[in-house]
Image (cartoon, rainbow, N blue to C red; front, side, top):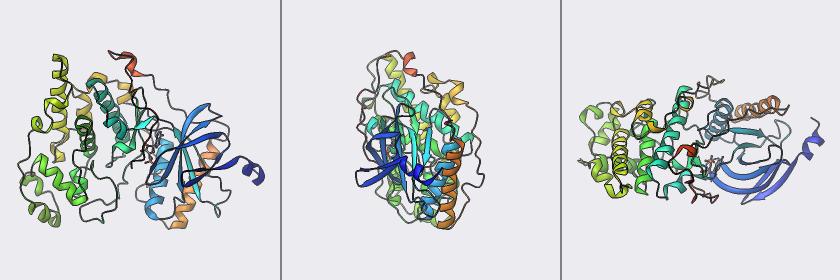
Length: 403
Ligand code: AMP
C-alpha cells in the first residue's frame, strides 16, 4: 500500500494521558481500563458493526520484559480460539516502516467488566459455579496447548452481563523467575500459588490455586491472602492454612527452606471457620447442599502442597461445577502454537522490535482480504438456568483500572 493511502486510514485521538492513532473504522474511543502494558479503550468498529476493545502497546520492544510479553501475547492470541479466552479481532500499527515502528494496537472482543467488579456483588451459587466453570474451561484449553498460566487474577478475567467469562492474558512465560528471592516488582501476587511464590517446580494445577483464591474472594468479598509483598504473601497463606508438613518442606531448595522453617508455626483454621455458613446463600435445603459443595471444592483447591491439590479435570468433575459440563467447551481441540521456542527466546531490543513488527505485518497479510478468524458467538447459557432473566445486571460498563 502506498504511504499516502496508509496515512489517510488513520486518525489520532487523545484518551486520558495517551494518544491513540487508530484506523478510521474505529470510532468513539473511551478509556475502559489500564494494565501493565498500557491503556485499553472501547470503540465502535464500523466494519464489523460492533463494539470492540483496543489495547495500545506503547513501544512494546522497549525492554526485555515488555517485549517478551507483547510478542508472546501476539503469537498466542493468534493461535488460541476458545470461547473462554479473549478473541483477537485485529492487530495494526500506524507506523509505516520498521525504522519508524513504535506502537502496536490490539483489537479484541469487548466485554463489560473485569472480575474485580463482580467480586463486590453477592453472587448466588448458579452464577458463582458458572463463572468458575468457564474459568476452568479456559484454563484447561490453555493447558492443552502447553500454556500454564501461573498468574491468573481478577483483573485479567473479564465478564459480560450475561455471565459469560473470558481470560484476557496468557500469564507468565515458562522461563519467568518468580520466587521469594526475586526483586519485588509492584505486581499483584495475591493469587500466586505457593510453588510460584517459593520458586519451586510446578505443574498444571498451579492454576487451580489461583481459581481457589478467586473463588474464596467471591465468597468472602475480600482478598483471601492480601500479602503486602512477596514475603508477606507466604505469611498470609500459612496464617490461614497452617504451616505445611515436613514432607512439603523437603521439596524446597535449601535457602528457601531455611526461610520457611524459621517462620512462626501456625495451626491454620478449618474450612468451616475460613468459610462459615453466613458467607453463602443457604436459605433452602438446595442452597445448603450447594454451600457445602462450594466449601468442599475450596478445601480441595486451596492445598499448599500441589501434589495433594485437585487437578483442573477433577475440579471440572466436582459436583459444584459439573452441572455445567459440556464436552464441546471442556474438550475443545487444542490450539497449535506456531512458535515452539516462544518462552525460550532471548533477544536484543532491536531484534524484538523486528520480531514484533513482523508479527503485525503477518497479521495484516493474513487478513488483507477481509478474512478474520472469527470466534463462535456465545449462545447465552443463561437460557438453561432456573431464572433465565437473571443476568449480572449490576455489572455495567463502569470498568475500573485495576491491574
Ligand atoms: P490488560 O492491559 O489486558 O491487563 O487490561 C487492563 C484492564 O482493561 C482489564 O482489567 C479490564 O478491566 C480492561 N480490559 C482489557 N481488555 C478488555 C476487553 N477485551 N473487554 C473489556 N475490558 C477489557
